[in-house]
Length: 236
Length: 236
DNA sequence: GTATGTTTTAAACAGGTGTTTGAAATCGGC
DNA sequence: GCCGATTTCAAACACCTGTTTAAAACATAC
Image (cartoon, rainbow over all chains, first blue to last red; front, side, top):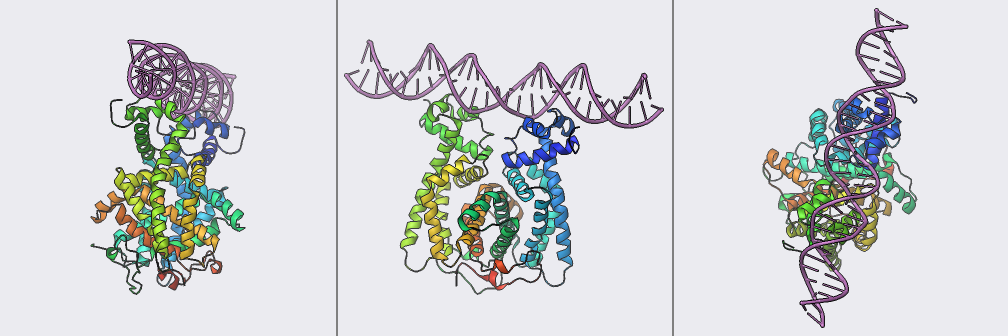
């Protein structure tokens, strides 16, 4: 082997880069092996198939991310005082930024992989992920429930996915957005600055006390402002 | 021709269905022409290339959507009293629901197409769309500015994309989410019910008065909590 | 040094891709 | 009826895909 790193890890490095840039199906094994300077057959030798390679790339990313996230969530759990939604969302920040430090454009690569995995046809990655990382997901939703105990589970479910959408969508395309931001507003921002704006946006949305059951669809009028208690929407 | 509709429109119908279900590159012209019961060569004859077919599918959807949206935005503009952020977001609801009525699963097909167009490799659809529909986009942001005049343009820019992410992500996958919602919470929801939950979420996030410049990143301490209770009644 | 297990290599495989071709079929006007 | 233009058709084109093969190279232990 002529270059640093084992054949296996070189394949993983190039694969994750190309997968995030071009998508899974648009990235050929020949492009990967050419970039990694290894033989075409070596990916089938080391990973078995392209499908397995995709999962391996995804797993390597998720493992290091969830490891960091679990640390931050554990720290928050031990913290004195009641937990705020804002704090729960903030546990995502450090792991994401760390991801951006470990490898170039790590955060956006990770989010792009996540986004692609989510919109995938057969969804075999989504199934794989929900099985493999259910504990992490459960801990996160558990913390959110602690921070917002009166929120009905179904409401929580939907708001969780609203947040997920903003997260993946924004960070996956953050490079293009940063460019626009710089040329239009002369503001140079990075992942950290985006998260500083995103987290308050999401926690405000998550904590909104709008009562959907009383809302007519086309209603344009004023909204109830007084009630502190968050909706228990509909029935249990 | 043995079946209703011209060859051209039959191709468009099947193409939009398969593109949304499987993605652009994963959908072959053979699959499209087989489903439409037309000859393989006819897509190249009528549209020139697969790339042009993708744009044609996209344009047909966008045209009917933006047409409806423009109507609702114009109506809102004429309305007496000051415009709320909530109202601006609500202009999206009726066009989306109408989209769902015109064809089966119209809203999710449309959103999936949007999502795929956004995460596309070369981004030729994104460029095409921003050029073709810049007027619609400008009108929408103009209304948002009227509803929230004190919001800095750069802040507006970011929050707009946060909302876009939630929108596309949630509606694109709403069928899978509805299934989970039904099996876990015995709540049967449709596009309309999702939007009723999503709009307040987004307007609360958009209107949040959190001051990002005062925010330390790793800070886990208390957060200004009053800001998150801020709602669609908006600025001030 | 030889034997053994692992890894790398070039080549071929079987199948799918978008696109082009030139002839056949169909349509509209007269 | 015929004619010219439009549309459809089966077939082939050139290329790319993931995967497999069997020989070569390498490493390691005795």
